[in-house]
Image (cartoon, rainbow, N blue to C red; front, side, top):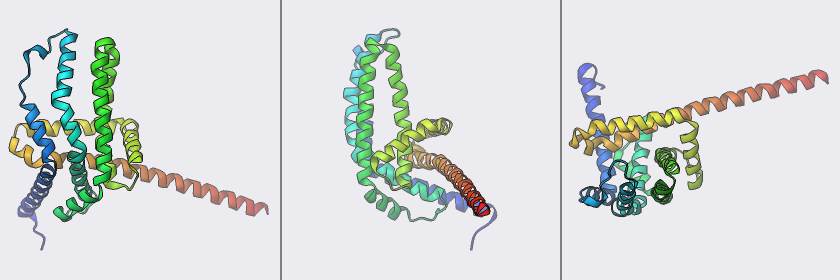
Length: 266
């Protein structure tokens, strides 16, 4: 029997707290090597000789190389084998919720998605990690010789990160080859700029809010981002389906009109 009123509201809220927290904990556990390295590198002491000084391009370059060698390289190596498969599984659970299957078994769905999408998540992670690594190296190089071009690589890194979220949504929703997923993720990022910006702003807002409450960050950061991101992705997909159906209906009407014209002439 479904509870109504205030008690029903509290019951539904507690259910969603349980769903989000369990999924988030699974995500963290399955990517724990990645997060262990992230926490470790964040606690590294920063040498005084690489502290950025205003207007000193050399300090920026030194900081960039130190950041790449000490804070980015190892996480980028681990990410394809830990972070990407776990995040893909989390997005698969979020997809079920957004599309209406809110009572989906969490553990079973997460484990099955982790196993079935592991290869594509890993391959996508390798490509994204390589791309980010290349963009960071290019930025450090060009900021010294051609600063304007260096800022272009910051923009390209931004596009890469946004397309990565679309990649997770696509992987959880469609059966495609890895390169096709990557291509469509980039198309969505560029072709739907407003929606992509909404995703970015929402993710930043979630992290800024949860940052004030470390305990909540541990239990809700990833799962809320996954639900929010896939929700916007699903809106885009549904709109595209409606547009395609309208085009097909119009083509069908035009074809029927042509056939009727031929019959009348005969």
